[in-house]
Length: 160
Image 1 (tube, rainbow, N blue to C red):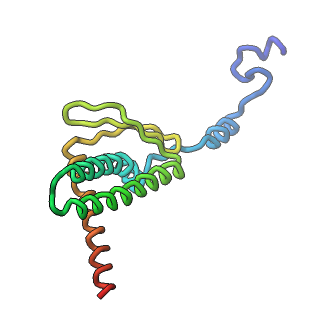
Image 2 (cartoon, rainbow, N blue to C red):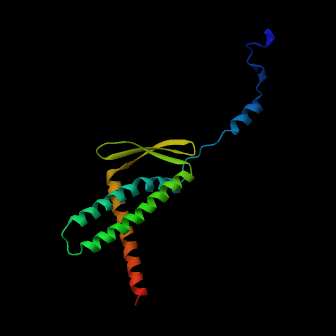
Image 3 (cartoon, helix red, strand yellow):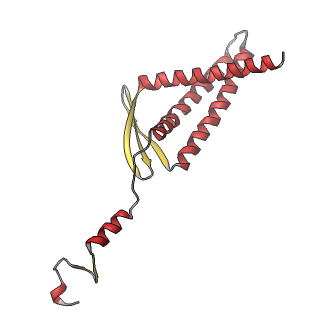
């Protein structure tokens, strides 16, 4: 290489980089858009549903150990709920994988839970309060119980 071309900023190695080429190569990089509202909902669901499943499974065991009169009914209902929630947890994980989203727990303190995520290359963090989590868990269990009751009522009405 000629000494005149060294150190003048026009040549790098043996190639020259024109501004147009630089713009073109920069635009070829994948753009990392932040997650949509629906994707945030999916991330939140992937965090909450396993907790809901854990609670329902624990309550199922408690019912089986109890001496309640309707123990077989309560236990069977809890098992049906657990199976339904387990299927939703698996579907939630599958949906995140399909959209190339990963969520990781960062830690927790007295009132907050911290998470970070990678969504199509976009990295960021979010947090949830423990009160919010409790409310969401209660709401989700209520929705699953309501759906189970509706299915049972439909079954009873169809058999009449």
